[in-house]
Length: 126
Image 1 (tube, rainbow, N blue to C red):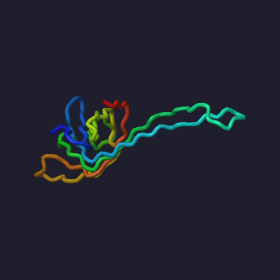
Image 2 (image 1 turned 90 degrees about the horizontal axis):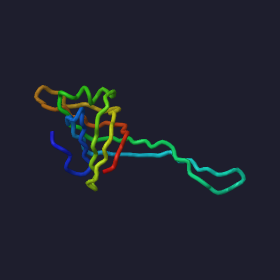
Image 3 (image 1 turned 90 degrees about the vertical axis):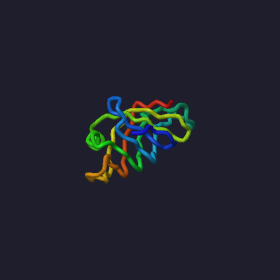
Image 4 (image 1 turned 120 degrees about the horizontal axis):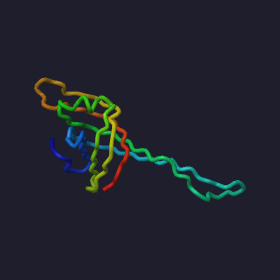
C-alpha cells in the first residue's frame, strides 16, 4: 500500500498498519455558533460556541482484502491522515459510515470501494 503523496488523498491505519488509500476526499467541518444578545439590546454581545463536527466522503478506496471487514463494518475506529493540496495533513480518528464495495473477484488482490462517507474526530491540522 503506497502512502498518500498528492493532494486530496488519505491513508487509513489500523493499529499502526496502513490498510487503505482513499482518493478524491471531501472534508467538511461545522461548528454551531449562537449569538448572545442581552435582553433589551439589539446587538450581539458575545458568541456562544458549540461543538465542532468533522465529516467527509471519498470517491475511491483501495483496501487490502485482509482489512475489508474493518473498513466496511462501520464499528471500527480507524486513524486517518488526509493530505489536502496544501501539503498540510489533517489527522484524526474516523469511522466509515457507508460505502459501495466493488471488485470482489478472485483475481483481485484488493477490493475497490467506489464511494463512501466517514465521520472524523480528535482532529489536528499539521
